Length: 157
Image 1 (cartoon, rainbow, N blue to C red):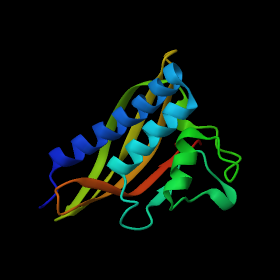
Image 2: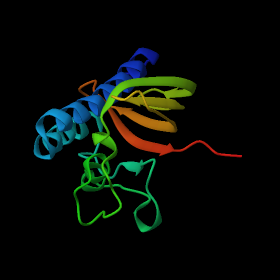
Image 3: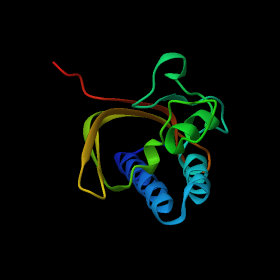
Image 4: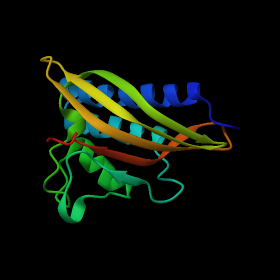
């Protein structure tokens, strides 16, 4: 049941594919279908069914810096939620490419942490690179779920 480096690679790739899928769905089918897709991604990849997920999105602040509920995460990815008026929908920015670079990995049996950089490219070729940390828990069914998601823009000198 121990988490492996391969498990972590697959989990990162699944997250990247999920963000791209949300974006493509939004671009081709609109917000209602993108919302369904985002819900699917959140259910497959995040551990909201176990309790609060420690979720700090890249572009969040003030009272809503940290999100521990599925509703808060969904709002960050697709926007369109009056409870989170500053959310513009990070997942619906026409993302087409995902790349992750590892800084460090920590694995202790069924718990693992990954820290590094994530670069997303949109359909126009514009890039955004963020500092990212994920914490994972491997469940009894061998699925790997995100229990911590922290993302921020790199420090500017």
